[in-house]
Image 1 (tube, rainbow, N blue to C red):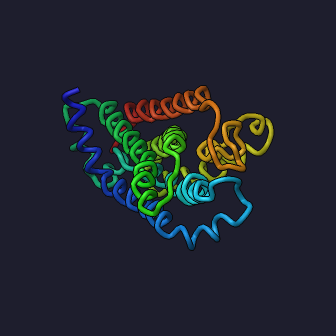
Image 2 (image 1 turned 120 degrees about the horizontal axis):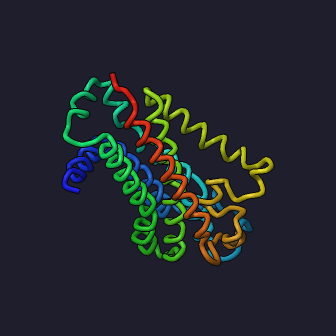
Image 3 (image 1 turned 45 degrees about the vertical axis):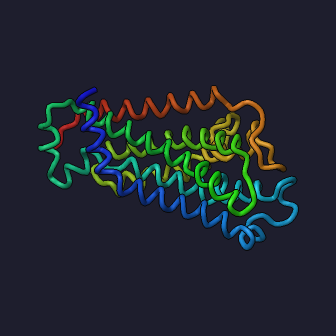
Length: 255
């Protein structure tokens, strides 16, 4: 545990720039969306699109099912880049590997910090909407934001794990990011065809609730019990991908 603290700090120093940019972009979208809702709502939520509170439908379309969700997915994959492959390109990997810690500890610290940052980004809309909405005399249900935050974190953990594994496999960050984007774009398409279309496997739909039994489309509200089994399975997959990345790192030669 004593060794993990400086390793976490090292991982933070390497990723804080990407995290702060990600947080700033997501924050700007949420804040701008709330304070400019009068003009944007007419475009994003036409009359008749949702039943009930129009602001709820507007925030859902803008943040939880639209640009906010897409931005979040991209940013968590960017957070996963780096590690020993980047240090190899910068010719600093020899120094890092000479530290009195194991490779597993190095990679685990990067993964742990990354998942913490994913959790923070997942909760960011909740914090911003809770603060900004009352300032414009509107409100979005706290329970809905909490549940969406949970869906975002679990789905974000899978996106992060895929990019984390890719950054371990490929020497170029651009190649790792390209592979991650291919997964983000084409995996949901694959779920439209049998036999995958028989199961709720589209991560984008899981994040937004679209076409899911726990989502009330006409009211743009999450309803019923969260899909705990599905979410637990997704976390297990993310953990397996990260564990695979750790094992690859332990056996890889870094010239």
